[in-house]
Every structure is written in C-alpha cells, then in structure tokens.
Amino acid sequence: MTAVVGILNKHAIAIAADSAVTIGSNGERKIFNKANKVFALSKLHPIGIMIYNSASFMSTPWETIIKVYRKQLGEISFSTLKEYEENFIEFLRSKNFYTDIALQVSFLEAFALNIINSVLNDIPIQNKNLIENASIESKEGFLNTLEKLIDNLITDWGSQTEFCPEFIDYTFEMFSDYSKELFDRINQLRFVTNGILISPTLLLKIKQAVHSILRAKEELTNFTGLIFTGFGEDEIYPQLIPIDISIVVDNRLRYFVNENRAASISNSNNGAVCPFAQTDVIDTILTGIDPSLEAVYLNNFNALFKRYNQTILDSIGNTNPLLKEQIQNLDTLAIVNEFRSLNQQIKQENHITPLMNAVSNLAKEDLSEMAESLIYLTYLKRRITFAEESVGGPVDVAVISKGDGFVWIKRKHYFKPELNQHFFDNYFKI
Image 1 (spheres, rainbow, N blue to C red):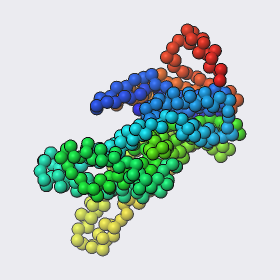
Image 2 (tube, helix red, strand yellow):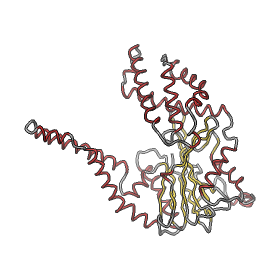
Image 3 (cartoon, helix red, strand yellow):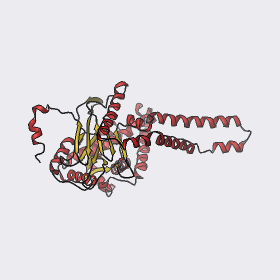
Image 4 (cartoon, rainbow, N blue to C red):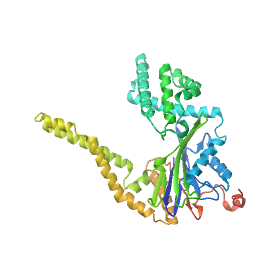
C-alpha cells in the first residue's frame, strides 16, 4: 500500500509519495521502505508521474517502463497533458511488455481466480455448514448459493454502461473463444479436484461474470494507478490526470481514465488537493472528520431514527391504525440522505472551501511542505496506532512549475551522489 498526493494551484503543483511497498506471498506480508513512486516523465519538460498500488505491469517494473519511455520521448513535447497520457498509452501498446500470449493468459487466470475466490469466500459467510459438512445436500446447497452469487455479479456488472476503452467492443463470444482452455483449467483446479462438479451452464455464467467485470471501469481488482501531472506546451496552469491500468487480455490494454479524480486548474478553479491510495488521514484534514467516523455517525443516526419510529409505533399501539400506517410508510432513507447532505454542506463551508482558498495562494515552497506533511501525517497515524505500517519510509517530494519545470525538493537515492558524478553527467545526454 502507499499514500501519494498532488496539490495544485496556479503557481505550480507539488507531488509527494511515501516509500513503502507491501509484498505478500502465501498469506504472509512484508513491508519494504525503498520504493520509488515519483518520476519525471520528461527530462526537459514540466511533466511528472506518480504510481500507486501495483509496482509492476505484466511483471515488468513500472520504474523501468517509465524510464524507457522518458528516453524515447527525448525532446518531444505535446500541447496538453492529455496528449502526454495518450502518447504513453500508445507507447505501452507498441512495446513488448506484454506480447507474450502465455503471459497474458497467466494474468487473466489470476484475474479470474481472484473474482471466483472472492465469491467462494463469501459462501461460508452466508452458510457455514455448506463448507464444513461434506454431504450430498451440502454440495447441492453450495452449488445453489454459488450460482446465486454469480447471478448477482452478472446482474450488477452486466448493467454497467461505462467500459474500458479497448473493451467496449469485446464481446462475450470473443472472450469465450479466447479463454476456453483457461476456464477448463480453472474448473479442474478450483472445483473438480475438490469434489465439486459444476454444470456447463454454471461455468458459462462464471465466464459471463468475469467478462462483465473485465470490461468495466472498476477498482476492486488489482491495478496500478498512474497519475500524470504537469503542463503541456499550451497549458498555463497545471493539470492532473489519473488512469487505472491492470492487465492485457487478447492484446487489449485494460485501462481507463479516472475522470472523477482528475483536476484542472483554471480561472474558475484556483486550487485542488488530490490524494490517492490510503486517503483517510488526508480526507480527515480536508473535510474535518475521519471518513470512517462519519460512516459510524450516519449508521447510528439511521439506527436511532428507526428505533425512534418504533418507539412511537409501540406507544400508539392499536389506538390509531391510520396514524400508525402513515408512520410505518415514512421514507426514513430520504431523511438520512438529507442528514448526509447537510453534513456535506457544513464540511464544504467550514473546512473544504477555506482550505482550498488557502491552497490557491500557497507559494511553491508551501505547496511542497504541505504535500510532504500530508504524507507524513498518514505515516504517523499508522505508526502510533495498531494499524499495519503500510505507509512509511522517506517521503519523495517534487514541485512542477511552468517556468522551472520538474524540481526535486526531497529525493532518496540508492547511491551516494558524490561517488557517482558520471550519473549526473550523463543524465541529460538524450
């Protein structure tokens, strides 16, 4: 896990990230604090990129991919940040990071198993006896529950209307032909070897569920967040474009631009704070309340309101059936939503707007200090509580401005700069 943030105003954008990376295998996890997550996307132009979540793409480290792209980009520049992002995606398509068909199938298998395993793990939650009692009846109940859960996935994800760009026209028939041997292998691995025989109809439904999720814009499965930020040649104010990218299937790159989390500084928007990955601490500072605590308040309000209604109903008894029916038909959800809306209005007026007004006037030095502090506070909370210390290590900080370009404020090195003058001598030999 990680924490990264971008803070923008009309002067510049400050970007910062921690150095923690979590490695997991066979249920065990280990955290290292030496990962690089902030990079200059160009040596000559004011463009940067940050990464979070997965540190590799189709088994190739993102750091390697980014630096190969930077070398290829050379002196080339584009009018807008969007064009840099599109050119980077085109670069991924043109290179051999994922041309190995066996590698594509391997990652698709991991993707499908992740979905199937999450469904299987949900079954004992609904009925523990379906797993513990190995009887004919329990197996039938297991299969019925499995099919219902798969049907729910198909209903939920099949109704999606927004798809990853390269999967809009990727039909189920195309996917089924491509993955036939794969799902036969999954069936053997997850079901047959465990004494469970699923019907061809159910296997087909599992394929449909995986296909629906594969096409959708979602952040539930494993992905890498790439955050492009900086200035195009024709842009006077900084921009930030995040994309989610995961795997390649049938030579189709699975990615989408996360428009809801993009930021664009303009005359009508003077400042923005954009946190990614572990955002709880930063959201607390921005909104004035911990998101998990706010959820508890909303749940408590909802429960208390229902209990209040029930108390009134108990008091009325059978003395006034009409009034009792009217109280029973009250739309409590609408009142809870109104309560949530009022809270949001208070947060906006008392916390978010004043903070954004302050951010819009910060100098470059203050932007970088704020970015570093937000990451450090996230680390500090993990450090002083019993939460896993999945944010930590040195904080890398950079500021990107139109006039000065990409400037490092704090940066860790795996080598001593004074012993490697040749590295700096060769850096700008494009």
